[in-house]
Image (cartoon, rainbow, N blue to C red; front, top):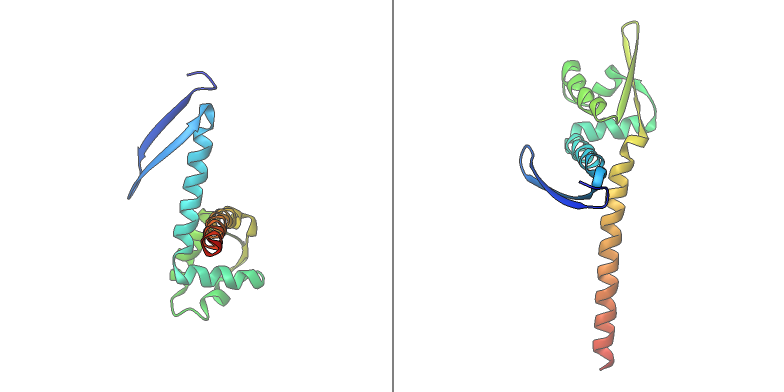
Length: 139
């Protein structure tokens, strides 16, 4: 396939079909970005993980401190941290017996971009609706 040709790929994922429209070699990048975004949304779908992210937004802290307001065991908190670490939202270091966790805000940028694009789409649509309604009142 030459660099300027288009192709459509339909791929079966865990729970749905995804359709990627790409040009040339960019397909791997598009799929990787979509997969990363899916992983981020799955990680942030859990209220306990969102609480952990919010707490780490204040500053780095130990796993014990993260577990204190949550009604779960340290191993339970560690399982949530593993999910957050896999998608890059949280990093941790271990010094002696203390594991300290930190937020990695740059990992949340794809979510911010996705939400901003959706907001811009709806603002554009609502602006168009307002113009249409204004024109109807003038008639």
